[in-house]
Length: 183
Image (tube, rainbow, N blue to C red; front, side):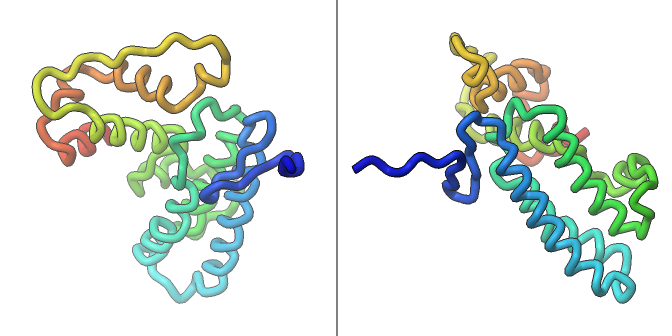
């Protein structure tokens, strides 16, 4: 007997919908982040700014970053929602009003925007999976026949890796690569 049809399916915490839009997954992220932020706001006044930053980095960032590599080709609307969640964390750290601009504060914290974070993790994964001997050649980009395959993580990883300078791709250690990629 075949399983019943479902519009969404959850596997390892990733919610995949029938049209591969990631909307259900992003809405789940929004709910989890808001639940964490609600709990953190209850004792906001009894914490220091450094502690609030650490709390966001340990409680909210894992929710935002979990399986972010599969979110290639995310629509502008859903990407903006992820950025707003990160901005919500910035407002918590500095005690800002919700309508205040947070870009300068986010830069002061040293945090990257959502898409920059995804590309950072994509670069780190690609670096760690490459051969360690010899020259690092550009990756071959497979032939694609659908938009879905064009937005897949291995195709976007290949494009991103090839866009990096050869001097960055050939750095000798993973630590030096991560440091150079953040700047």
